[in-house]
Image 1 (cartoon, rainbow over the protein chains, first blue to last red):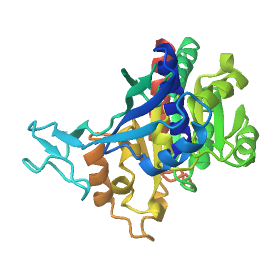
Image 2 (cartoon, chains in turn red, blue):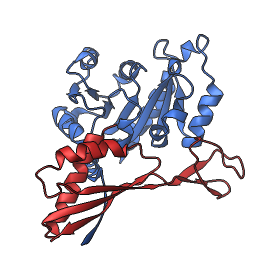
Image 3 (cartoon, rainbow over the protein chains, first blue to last red):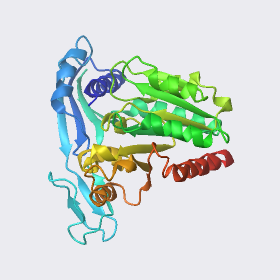
Image 4 (cartoon, rainbow over the protein chains, first blue to last red):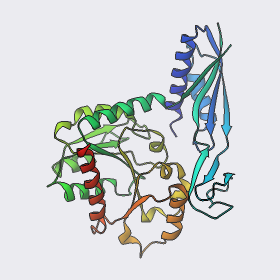
Length: 115
Length: 220
């Protein structure tokens, strides 16, 4: 996908918040990614080591927490986890009218800094 | 020390997209983000759309390509409408900043509709909001009937689906029911237009939809 752009955005957001908090250094960055977001952690890590060099974030460890996808049925209200086997109608009422409740998250949750 | 951030990673893009929307709304221009895989007929659909609407409105086209070519923009210009070519320099998608620059290069005061032809790709364009009013995807019959199942994210964010090359249905194995079930699972009730850019079949309904949305935008 476009992990380079994503990694640059992570660096920009983390740097802005770190400077605002008066940090000397950023040690850890916590990122939340929903199951439905097609981002490859390894690629982000690969770019991270290159682009964070000589910044306040150099050496910071990236932590990725994955949120499983939960679907909600718009017909019967049933909530269920989306399996890896892909798209299926509602297991309770067989309806096709579904909406993801969780799994589309893609945000920088927090940073850990040294002052 | 832990600092709470909770900021969307593509927030910077979303903010510029918001400004693009304001710019378009101020001029009462309706705009679409046209996405599809390479070879599905994006430029053909735009040319058919221009042909169907050119006596009724002015249409500006933003052509996204990864390579520095002007093949598509040249076709639009030859059809008599203003076009801007955006070369992404290898990037897999258009982003809101590119659209901001392209909008500045179009004669917006004269326009009723802006069509953005995104880079041919079913993955990355889905993640980048451009600020346009409607996301439109072309799925063409020869690509196969399994695409909603394989590229769910792009289908989730759609406002309109166009199924192109329906003139080829007798010659390829494309199970329309299986395809449409996948679409329904991702985007129930999605507005869908089956068309053939080659024969012109079905184009009229798509043109009517666009005309309606352009009128609504004009009325405010």
